[in-house]
Length: 275
Image 1 (cartoon, rainbow, N blue to C red):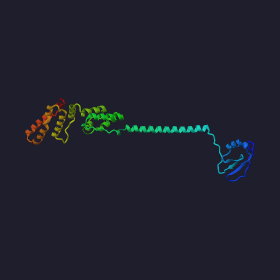
Image 2: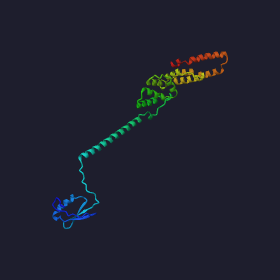
Image 3: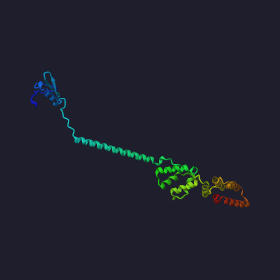
Image 4: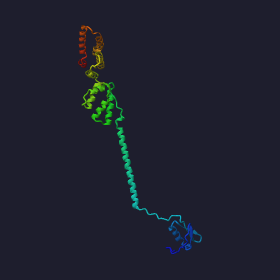
């Protein structure tokens, strides 16, 4: 078998398993060519150098045939890089959208009205702390005027709720809040008492003595610094109780009528409100 370097290789019989073939044609002068040949020989062919400049060729049929590595095509590399880059960009966009959705949900939870414990106001508490907290809730939730009025109405209980229920529903929130403030605020106590007297009515099953007692309580609370007016109304409930138990004769009835007219004049809201 002739090679491109001009020497012949002895053919060897085909046998299974590993075999060695002497390369007698290779002399010591051709060692450089043999070394070069070793670099280009297939991996399944092995050359064993022996003494005297001879080589033995070994063949292992169990080894797979040699395949040259296909050179990396620059276009394939660019495509793979582009695909990897686009995939990375897609993941980046997905992550950014997920983070944006999480941020929006966090903002909605933070702005949710459920975060705030709604205050309550019955008219007996101080007005300023209640209105300060409610105003802060309004700013955090950015409610409309209608919703603000509805939430404010939900916070009222007791006497404040009864008073608010008598107001016009067409009032805007600012006027509605102003009327509640004028009615129950700590400031201008005589004015508040005068307004309460205007709205106070005798209940259906309430006796005249109990009604007079309520009027006296309102008057004492509203005009505590006006001793003359307080003393003027102080004995009315006791007088009414005595009159309810002992009025039998006609003279006593006429006396009761004169006293009732006197009491009616005394309970007139004009004299109390003008103080």
